Amino acid sequence: MKGSFFLTGDFYRLFPALVNQLQKEGHYLGAHSDKHLLYADWGKRDSTLVTREAFRKDLQDNYQTMTKAGINPPVKKFFLPAYEWYNQDVSNWCTELGVQLINFTPGTTSNADYTVPQMKNYRSSEEIYRNIMNYELKHTLNGFMLLIHIGTDSKRTDKLYDILDELIDALKSKGYEFVRVDELLK
Image (cartoon, rainbow, N blue to C red; front, side, top):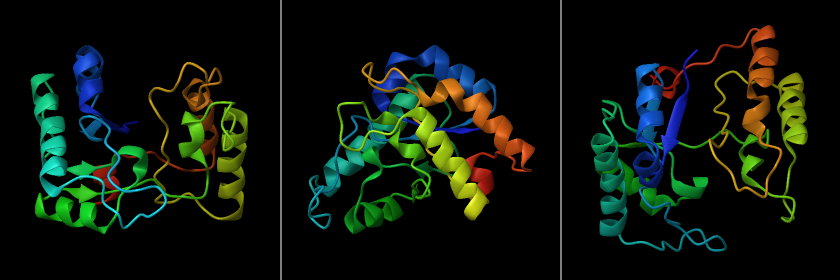
């Protein structure tokens, strides 16, 4: 089983041995911003917070850092924006750069695994697990892109990735298979 990892340039710089191991295992490795920039205002999404040039540089720096870490950037470049937050400007800039902008599929709260108990929107790993399974019961997860963070704040002691094997086994037992993003979005 192969997965897709969208990592910041900082992550590629800090953990070159890990990312090289992920590539050797056949996982898709992509960009997630070099410095994890916020591209659009949280309250007024059409307000772009970076210039076109700053965005281009940040994305290119992410890919250059991948190369310096020994990673071969993929031929088909998918890009998961920092904070999973973007606007039309960012979408247009990705198109200009030949990069396919993607995001997680909403509905399961899998992306809330970054939250900590002090936050209003905190979701425990158990709750996220239940939400994924309940969503699957009512709908389907076919074609879904579940977002699970490879690292989270130390204040979050219940890491979703600690129960990832259990989640994968539960979904596989229902007939789901896991594929890389480039296989899913051919």
